Length: 67
Image 1 (tube, rainbow, N blue to C red):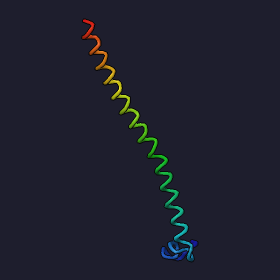
Image 2 (image 1 turned 30 degrees about the vertical axis):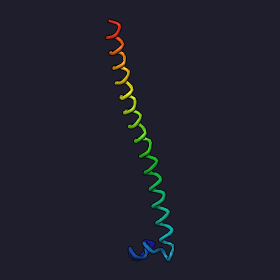
Image 3 (image 1 turned 90 degrees about the vertical axis):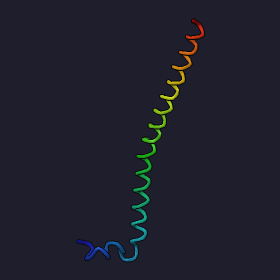
Image 4 (image 1 turned 120 degrees about the vertical axis):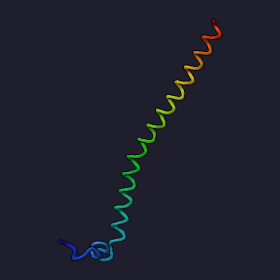
């Protein structure tokens, strides 16, 4: 094993804060890049459903006026 204890692994001869901060930033970016398209897709589907309801209501209203 490269390090004798978890503390040595955490500190990495003084380089630990930079290494772990790099890992944290990378993980945050990856999570964001996965989360963002999922949220955008949900918002898109919600908006399309709303527009379909509006269009259906307008079609129903215009059909009633023609009768």
